[in-house]
Length: 606
Image (cartoon, rainbow, N blue to C red; front, side, top):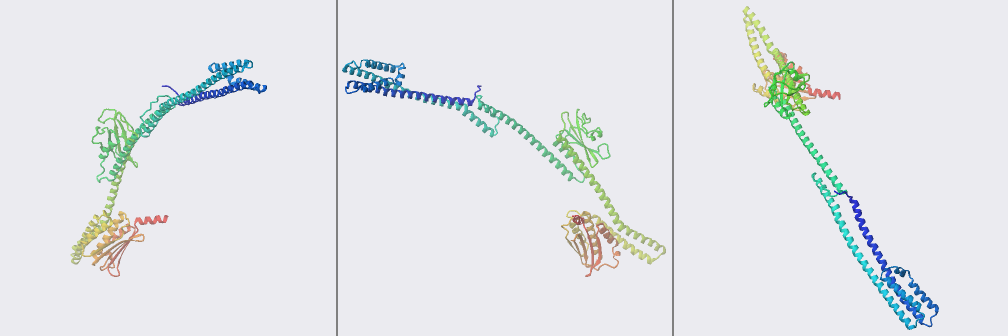
């Protein structure tokens, strides 16, 4: 491929056109200058004829002076000596020959002019004029020839310029327009995303260098675009993998939160973890905090690896990468990764991952498996906390039951034991009056103990769940209404006030106990229960329209009233029992719930 310069070629083409135009102009100028000389020569030739006739006329005119004749001969001589004729004499064409012949004939006539008779002088002059006519004809032909030559030069120059312009136009089309069109086409394709099109430069000029640069740019863009597509595809795969990982971790967390009462089923978590982490095998070993070997081992359902039978749990608990692990059921080497499950200085086991000879865990796989191990550890920790809470709740419930039994049945049985002692003494003394009194006391005590037992059973079965305290109160009202003819009306206005479970259960028991006392002892027709918020306290009022309370109300229901007082103390409240002015009994109880007490503390601190 030839290496040429497009700019230099354009400059040469322009120089050629300018040179041709300059040559044409120079030739035209030269030819026109020659035409101007020919016209001048014709005029001078006419002057020769005029001066010749004038000299002849003065010679034949007697009246003419010698001075006039001399001046006429001088003018004729000056005309023959004109520089234009001098230049014509140096030429070698027919025009110079004619001029020399006419001048020689004049010189001969001039020497013999004075001695010649008039008739012969006139005849010689006519011959000289004829010769001058021939010279003028030759000048005319020469002028016409110059004009024809000028036209020919102009026509040839016109065709030459047109031909050169056509050549330059074709050359520009081939060397400039066509490459520019190709550059425009490749630019359009690149803008449309086609980076595979390549230019084929025919000449190594400036446009060829630009075309080669475009090819290199296209290759670079295609390479960069390919790399970008590869990176985008890789990033897409990583995002999909991250999305799958996050979805799996979310499902695992949800499974932990929504665990069944019997515990968490780790089998689906391990099965899913193997698929998401893209590992060969996983094994979950659950170990107690004080144990040295697993009490439960969980593996994927479709695992080709066997359970670890080495019982060398110390290696796994160390968290180190081990090769040639034994007891896997597959040929060595097998690489084992361990992810201990620790939370709050408590150890719950280890998650073991096994990979084949060519398999190593990447950073994201290790991070995912460690997250799974941490979530399982958190699940086991939450389960352990829940178990401890259940133990504490059970212990607290047993304490409450023991206290209720002590405050009711235990004292009732102690009272009956005293009456039995009195009965034995009365039998020993055969004291019928005392026997009748003791028998009546025993019957009353057994009835009271039986009633207290039923109340305790009902109390122990009470719970606050579902719709909360309001629902439990409505259920209690329904149960108590079924046992009596009295009407019970509940006015509950604490819908916007959150109470703790402890506050709800104590409040429920106080309301139930006070309502039962009204049903059993008031002998009225109606019981009104009002529960509302007053200032920063919860106020409970239970009114009946019965007979009121005696001066010693503790004899009426000592155990029930004592229990209500005990519950009010647990809530930090105050309970009072009084007679209503309009008749009946009023039980009032108020306490500050935790939510309002905390709000008051925050307000004082602010």
